[in-house]
Length: 100
Image 1: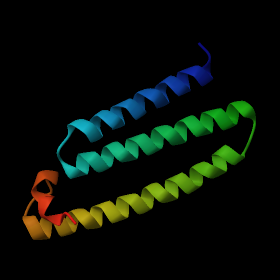
Image 2: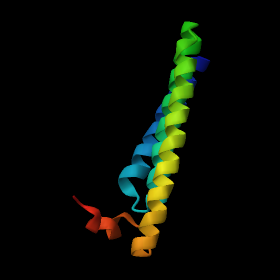
Image 3: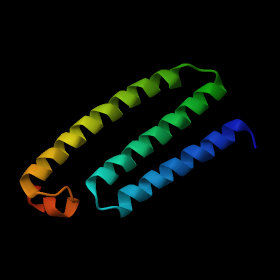
Image 4: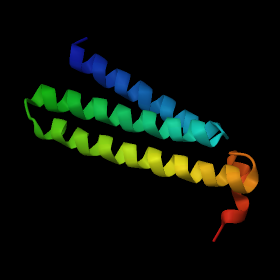
């Protein structure tokens, strides 16, 4: 196997682990960590493809994805602080009164 294939297999594995964390875990912090893992797997895949193609545009795009991931983390953690203040827990099932 070439190095590009191994990197893509690693990215697919990381993305799959991220999806499983988001779907199976109930803790909100773990769900946010799963989303971050999926974004980082996408970054890894984009960088590997752009390096294999010899293009810089994919590597520049990764910087924008990292910025979006940082904003998502900041907003997600602020939502968690408000959940803890209102419900005394950060479990996603306790936040069912936030509908609508």
